[in-house]
Image (cartoon, one colour):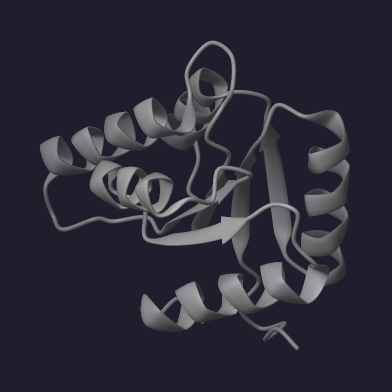
Length: 135
């Protein structure tokens, strides 16, 4: 179970309504706060104006895809200096080894293939939170 004394604030960047509802329900059940962005462009704007602990990033979206959004986030972090780095978990149906490499090359920290089970998302969030000393 999550540490309720350290509620994570998560940004979900996902364009598919069914996938949105599923991820929102799982994350809320864990006791974490979650915001929704329906594409990478909206996700980038929310990243700029809010503080998140973790981003769950779909890859294929309209307006701006997850690869482009991640590269933009990493560029902003580099310009701001100070070593800031928000963990980004790729959540995608594109699960080939080349897809994983593309996500990693863009600056994503973890990878979760769709479809996934609630406990798989929970495990990935907790692993990233522990790895980046968020919890």
